[in-house]
Image 1 (spheres, helix red, strand yellow):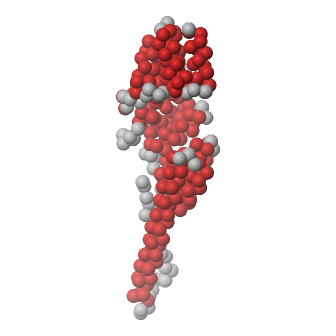
Image 2: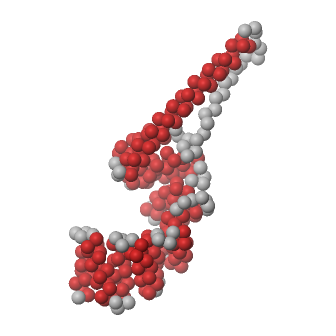
Image 3: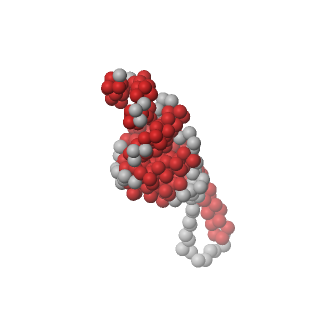
Length: 266
């Protein structure tokens, strides 16, 4: 968390002091600085309390209360990039992209190497289908060698390239994501989609298999695996994959689609 110390500037127009004034003024100055420092510390603590409450409500999905608490945190301490990032996330989850972008940018302005803020800003651009802007933000994220989850940014770069139809670049970044985290199922699934788009069905099947190996409850990956297994003429395993989707997500659109596939294959 990045804090900025409050600066106290006292300006005195008098250039000369007479008698006792020379002794009184320094004590007054110390008192002013002391009181200002106490106020700043108090505000920072209040802001921290609002921030922690806001993050807790954000994690619980209580967006209105999260927005209220995080807004209070930012108002009381606007110089902390973490507060702007969290508030941006709350706006992002609420679907208010303009406000989310504003606070992510403010977080980055306060800390240019704040990888999480770059990643979150990139996520907004992904949603808006601004692929090149998204790629730029994710690349800024991974440029920071201290970023603890680069697999997220690399996978998102890959997804942006996939949406642009640049599948080779997409796969290259999915592989970087997997290098950063060998059990990152999302990257295996998206890489499988890119291989399938290139009609490299065997490679796609391998990628989807890895996705469900590391995340057995990953319904989308099971469905994608089933689709590619049909193309590989492995109907038995395709049916098994679709049946897993139905079991994992009953009474959903993807489950109904999987059931239709099973009916056609039997």
